[in-house]
Amino acid sequence: MQFGEPSFFNLFWCLVPLIFFMIWGMRKKNQLTRKFCGNLLISRLVHPGTEKILHSKTIFIVLAVIFLMFSLTQPRWGYHWEDLHQRGVDVIIALDVSSSMLAEDIKPNRLERAKRKITDLLNMLEGDRIGLVAFAGTSFVQCPLTLDYSAARIFLSAIDTQLIPVQGTAIGNAIKTSAKAFHTKEKKSKAIILITDGEDQTGEALSAAKSAGNQGIKIYTIGIGGEIGAPLPELNGNGGFRKNQQGEVILSKLDEITLQQIALETGGSYVRSVTGDIDLKTIYQDQIKRNVKKKELKSERRKIWQERFQWFIFIALIFLFIETSLSKKKPVEKPEI
Image (cartoon, rainbow, N blue to C red; front, side, top):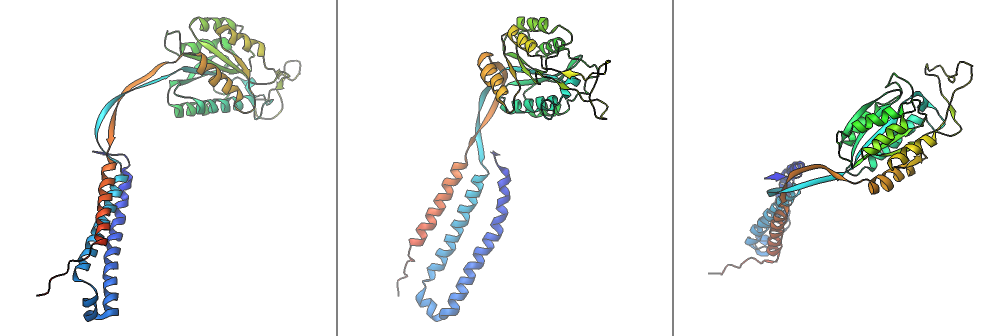
């Protein structure tokens, strides 16, 4: 036997004061009645069998409460095996952590906005496996594919621009690392969500995207930043903005053309990051969920126990019915001799 809610066994401690209260109540009632009527008068007004009926009624009420409380613990016995199959898509999120993601044209900055987007996406996932790849001048797998979204949130919280010492934006390398993270040659159920400002500095992004498309991987890109550009804050934390050798403030601009070409190369799509979760809804619900075929991600056999709390409720109702019947029952008159 198993119990679905064993914590309700603590309620049985309430039976002790309940039983004492009912016993005290009956005795107190009997004392007050005898004090008011007197022993001689009460023997004429109250049949001797009435007290026995009241005791029986109390016992049946207590038994009904016990069985009702027992039903709350959800007793279970008997079981059957059930095969569970979970289907979904493998999704790798490649997040740009280069210094250009510190630009504040999107508040609080591009990286923090991107991390919030990923958190929103984790809340939207419906049984798909998720993985994280961080990239700047190089890339690595921050979180392997998993169904544990809580673990993915922990890995996500550790991402910042200091994570990768090699600066730059190597989008091509990020796509290659993401493609290897799938660990399967199956040409379906694979999608990469690339979140970056699109300033590719290696020129390998399109060739890497083409290779990923040949592997059956669809790349969906989210551009984060503005076309006008924004200055990059100094990394030393002393304020001010970074400048080039000529003393001019360096501006980081969103390269939408590159991101659009990457997405088209694999049959994916591109959206620009906006306030709220409209871009995520477009990418995940309208694109990935509809256009990427699902596969079986997890299969297991689970023991399903049979709920038996109904029997205890039924027995409790029987006791209550008996108690009600005793209320209508009149004591049997003893024949006078």
